[in-house]
Image 1 (cartoon, chains in turn green, blue):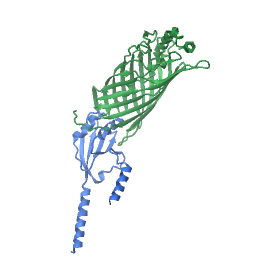
Image 2 (cartoon, chains in turn blue, brown; image 1 turned 90 degrees about the vertical axis):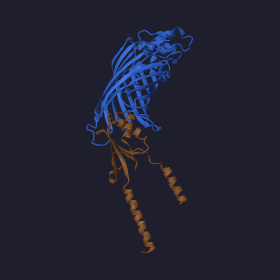
Image 3 (spheres, helix red, strand yellow; image 1 turned 180 degrees about the vertical axis):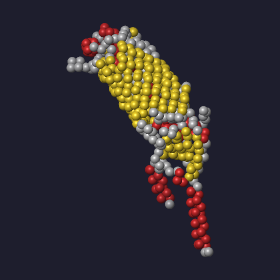
Image 4 (cartoon, helix red, strand yellow; image 1 turned 60 degrees about the vertical axis):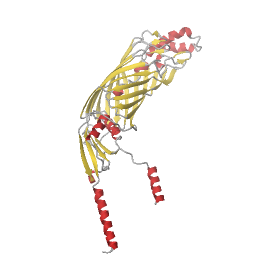
Length: 328
Length: 137
């Protein structure tokens, strides 16, 4: 997005502090904001499915993962997200996942114009993952677990500032219940791992506010152990691993107040590099994300420059009754 | 032999028998070959399920050998099916299980790698018990 266009939006908001006075320009502002909505709210958000690829969750196990992610984009966009992923094993093949998220984002700002910003909860993802195929061998695992659920509208899609909708990059939700479907596939051994997933989030058009377009995501990941190079004969050492993760996202057209926003589709491909250390009870990781390809219909769309993230994962075993029956 | 001497002899016999019986205390040790477990987190999946067993007390994990060793409470019998169920509920295909009876020096849980599955009672509770015993005594 060019500097003058951004200034136009900010000045437009500035000049219309009175809501009624802003009415003639509201539709125009909403449409411009919708164009922006394509890029940031979704592709900057980590895919909930990446984390679940092929990893079993034991019956009665509670797994909590805290993430902390910052995003820098052109021009003058900064985002901070704090997603928390909670997984619970219901039965050996079935696990329930909940993704909570809250984010802060700010756009623009300068000596004469104030920055626009928002701090709010994002939509909550709730889904079930069922393992349909598993091939377990000594020190290796292969899994195909499809998943299905929905994003619940906990975020805001009509967040306003100074009488008008804030740009889409500052909105935190879709305003509707969004069905969410996908599948993952993964192979892991003690020295090497590879996983991939494909998910689709269907975003119905909300009656008001900014409705981001439906989203298709596909991720592919490879990882290898850095330390220890040779596993000790006995015991359970902590493992240091490096992971490369490519994330492809395709966003359909957005809507503003139920009206199709022109030039609002986009495609992005980004590359993650993650360093992670895992022990019996926890895992910690740090990484960076770089865009490899950002293709938008709109020449003024926000373009991500760099994203950095940190995560910490902890495993609990919940108190539970002894199981009465089982079958292999 | 005087009555006091006979009493002393009986006492010695009882003590010796008690010591001998103490040496006979055995535990069941289960060694399970694991399928699909390739990371520390996978072993924690198993620990979650082992904690559900009332009589499982100690566990030792070997990542390279993909093997888990579980020691049960003294005198407790355990079946192979129990360990297979643990693996299944942890999300993995059950592997073969070997059961042994171990006694004496082979039961050394201070060696590296052993992890206690059941937490010992809190110190406060233990202190309260001691105080209560003293008061009663």
